Image (tube, rainbow, N blue to C red; front, side, top):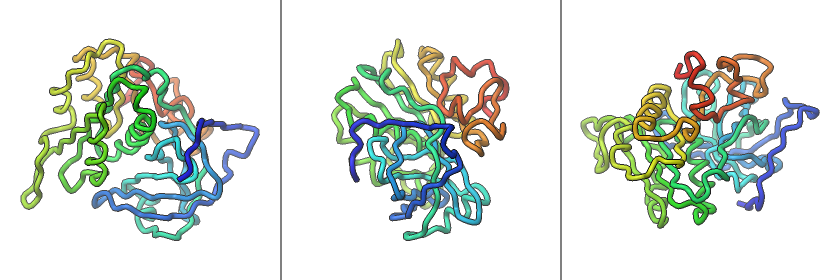
Length: 286
């Protein structure tokens, strides 16, 4: 993969926002029974900032919003991790190496990683919410010397539902990185040697001073809600808790209004918000 020295993201409304870039599926990674990662080679590089999302089209079927799960320092190959949850994603899970899909974007806000420099960065996620967090994590690893420490806490329903299994060993080799996992339960016949409990149980073992350090959360709404509440209880400031909000984002640029969240559009004002920004909006966890 070719590295992009300085990611530059541009979304010019004067250009056609519906223009689709063809992309070939060059690898399919089965992460879990319901989640797979497509490694895509677009016809031209797609620079993006970690946290932003793209619209992925299955020709003749439809499109959906997904956040790249790869580092934003790589723009000629993109990983997209997708859970099978509906009509379009059903077809995504039927796609195979060599198939052509369409990409448009990037859209939305990003993680402000320049604010994370010199800080202890805490990342908390679960399920397919780990996709944007993997992008953030890999982006931070690319320049890990800029951060005091990086702690990545990941949850899954069961051992077989854990994603990015093959990367854990490598991630743990980095000197300023802590990577911990938990599963909700261990069904009979499955083995597991790490933490058992919901994702927030991992917060009990952290020793980070929450003063002025950032925390990033993404996952199922119920996990994000209680993860945020635990972080607030621990002492994190509302403005330092970053949330990737998953809403029904269709057009990608605030025209269809499907992702209205109070006074915000999740697609163009988000998907990355601070808790301080959205805490007073209705039904943010739904």
